[in-house]
Image (cartoon, rainbow, N blue to C red):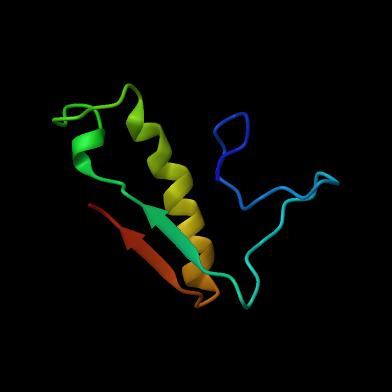
Amino acid sequence: MTDEHGAGSMHTESNGVRALPGPTDALVVVDVQRDFLPGGNLAVARGDRILPPINRCIEQFAQRMLPVFATRR
């Protein structure tokens, strides 16, 4: 997830504290494909801005040996 500044983080609790993934969490990354990035067949303007936050989330889950699932159509 990204905050209002585009910084990658886990979700933010209502009290403003950023929560890290817990032992029962999993990350699902949906439909991230080259086609949606600049230069792709279905390019989205600035679509590549999602990659660093997604990669940071994946790293946080991998460091904790938590499952990460990626899907695409």
